[in-house]
Length: 409
Image (cartoon, rainbow, N blue to C red):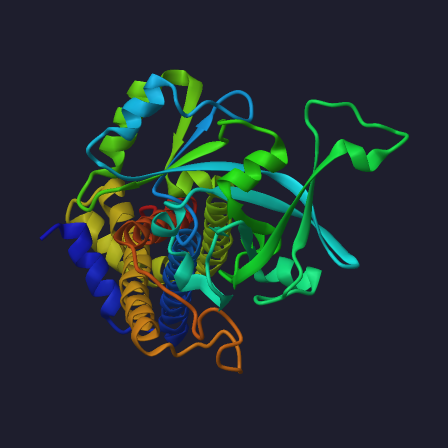
C-alpha cells in the first residue's frame, strides 16, 4: 500500500486528541455528502424533464423533416426529392404546407399557424392519442375539417361538432393590398371543426390548426409547393444512417432534421438550465469544502510530533505534504461516494414510487411526480467535480500553511 495514503487513512479514521478536529472533519464530509446528493438529484430531474418534453413533442414532430435552406417553399416533384421518397427505409412520406393566417369564428378571431397535411399525416403523427374532443378528419365529400389546439379552440370559443364553419383569411401573396377594398386582398377558406388536441405544449396548443393540404394550397395560393417533407422510417432503420443518406442526395439546398434538431431551441434551453444549476451547486460544494482548510490546519498542528518522527526516519517534505494532501482528498472522496450512493437511491425511489409530487391535486399537471432519469455520464461528472474541488481545497493548507507547521524543528 502507498505509504502516504496509508498514513492519511490512519489519520482520517483515528481519534484525535482535540475533539474539534473530529467535528470539523465530520462537518466537511457531511457538507460534501449533501452537495453531492443535490448534484445527482438535480441533474437526474433535468434528464427526466428532457425525456418528458421529448415524448410530448414526438406526438407531432416526425422522425425526420426536410426543409429548404433558402426560401419558404420548394417543389416536391424534383428528382432528388423523389429519390428520397423511393428509399427503402422510408415508411411514410408526407407533404406539408404551413403558414400563418387569421382564423375567425363569429365575433372572435385569432392568428393561427395553418398546417396543411395530406392523408398520410394521420399515420405519421399519433394524432389520435392526443385528441381530447371530436375526431381527426381532413375532408369528407365537399366539406373541409380542421383539428385545433385546445388553446386556439378556447380563444375562438368553439368545440367539435359546431355546425357553423370557421373563416380562414390569408393575404394574397402575389397581389398588392387594395386600400379601397382591403377585404379583396385576402383569400378566404372555410372549415368545420373536427377535433381538438392537447399535448401540453404552448407552441402547438395555443396556435396550431391542422387542415387538408388542398385547402392550405388554395388559401396560400400554391399549386404543388410545400414547406416541408415529413418522414417516418420503417422499424429497425438507423435514423443517423438514413439522415446521412438523405443529406448526400439533397446536398446543401435542404436541411434534414431529427426530432431534437426540430426543437433545438427548447432542448438547448433545458441543457443551459441544467448546467447552470450544476455550476451553482458546484459553487455551494466549494464553499462546503472550505471546512477542509480548517480541518487540515488543525490536524497539521496536532501532528507536529509525528512529522518530526517521520523526518527522523528519512521522510522528505514531498512525502509529508502528500500525507496531508491525501487526508484532505479522502474527506471529499468519501463524501462523494456516500453522496452519490444516497443520490442514486433517492432517484430510484422517486422513479418507482414518485415520492415528491408536482402538486397537491392529482391530474393538475401532465405527470403527478417529478420525473427522474439517471445517466452514468452525470454520475462520473459529479464524482470528478467533487474530487477536483476537494483536491484544490486540500492543496491550499498543505502548500501554504504547511510551510509553517510542517517545517523541521
